[in-house]
Amino acid sequence: MTHSGERIAKYLARAGVASRRDAERMVEAGRVVVNDTKIFHPATFVTAGDVVTVDQAVVAAPERTRLWRYHKPAGLVTTHRDPQGRTTVFEKLPADMPRVVSVGRLDLNSEGLLLLTNDGALARQLELPSTGWLRRYRVRVYGIVNSDRLAGLRDGIVVEGTRYGAIVAEVDSAKGAHAWLSVSISEGKNREIRKVMVALGLQTTRLIRVAYGPFQLGNLARGAVSEISGKVLREQLPKKK
Image 1: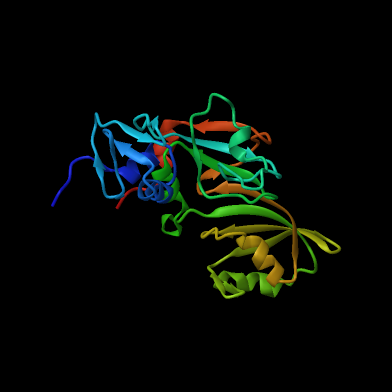
Image 2: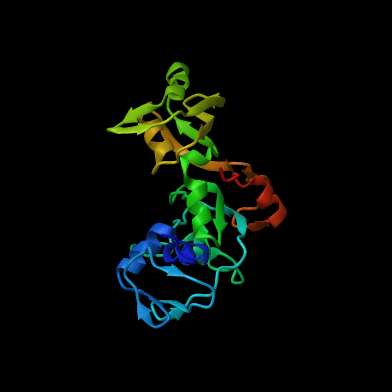
């Protein structure tokens, strides 16, 4: 059986309301109404002209997909609402920014490149390891670096029962018990680099993401936002198979 239109969760994700997964939870919680009818199933389809509301607020139809680079400072959390009341990335964005979601996250004490988009479906796509985009970091560590163990990360590592895939890590510079590393990962699991460094006997004292896939932090000032042009975005997005 074929359907016209678009699944509600994808529609909400493209409209920048939330990720597709979070949009599905919104639907199941009865927070979404289509044409005056509350819906509960994420497989509901919507078409052009349908009126969609979330928590009684009308959802504007999805705009063209846009992507921004943001230089996240340390001390901000990458979430729209923080139960602990900490300042979020989204509170620090320019007032004229549309509602956006992040592509992956950077934890409270991490800094550097964070991609932002108004299309939740795109965010989810770019987070998937199958997309093949490397996340590259500069990592300052405290401790004695064992070059053999560092090289062995290319084969992956298990830390406290969690399997991490191939990690490419190299020493850029070292002075005493302090060293700067270049680290590339493709999965981006929660606090992956920090946990792996602990397993190697190293304490991460600074973590800066310098690239996400083809997009670079470059000389973007701390706290600044820069939109990626539509042409560059179309050229760089993974081609659908």
